[in-house]
Length: 142
Image (cartoon, rainbow, N blue to C red; front, side):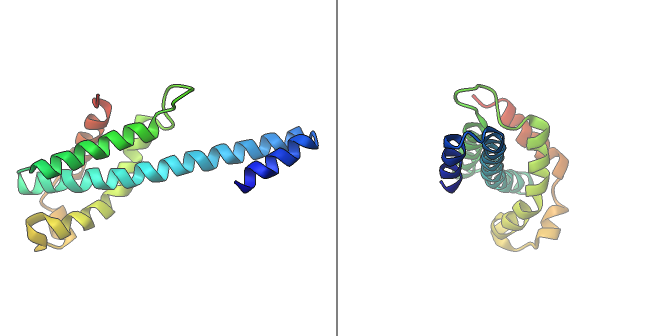
């Protein structure tokens, strides 16, 4: 909100150069907020995909969580008025890679009743396959 008030002042002063710089800063802050939300949803998605892969089963609850996470990733990433997305698939893949370690820690608390440490659980699954599966779900979501 502070930035919008500053922008208003700059426009009234006809300081368009600084106003444009502030607009760029506001745009970057907005994109960073979108990326942080997508990162959080990627963790949720990965947790359930890791559990599915490790336990070689799924539950309705896990599937609903997967579907919900994919939906939220898509909704957060979609540009409403301008069309398109805020970030592309290679960037989402990068975010999934960054989120994977945290997701593994969370999944280790849930998979197999929490009996395995994250390092042990990590040895039971293939991270590249899980991330590729996540990308496929995100790309093919309707």
